[in-house]
Amino acid sequence: MQRLRAVAERCAHDEDGLPGTVPGSRTGTASEQELYPGQAEDRFQVLDLTSRVSVPYGSFEGAPRTKEWTPLEPGVVDDKYYVGGIGTVREVTVEGRPFEENVLTPIRNGSG
Image (cartoon, rainbow, N blue to C red; front, side):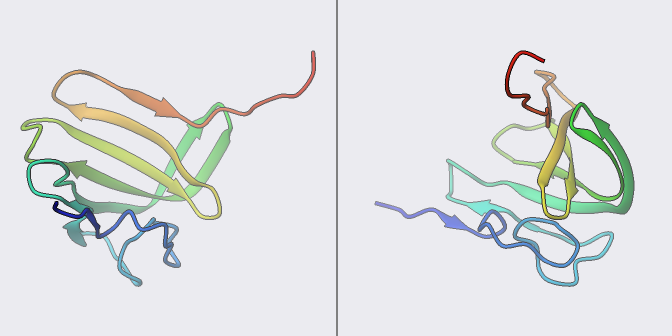
């Protein structure tokens, strides 16, 4: 049985807040995220380290943004926005189908 080798999704965070990236990642840095041939072959590239992003949870400046894709889903590209100390706050399909968007939403306790 082949084992999943998580390259960039290993729950580590560098100083830029990007999960699993190589410390000191800069705009243009690209690498594998996951490698399990035929099952998980995700790739990423750092597009920007100073994006603005607004989601129901809040608005943030200086959010790193990555482009992510996999050869297992040709033509599909997602952008992800990260906030240090929180993690991914927005993921949106920017090319291909199906369109998907996931955003961080606050959870309120009680009736109000």
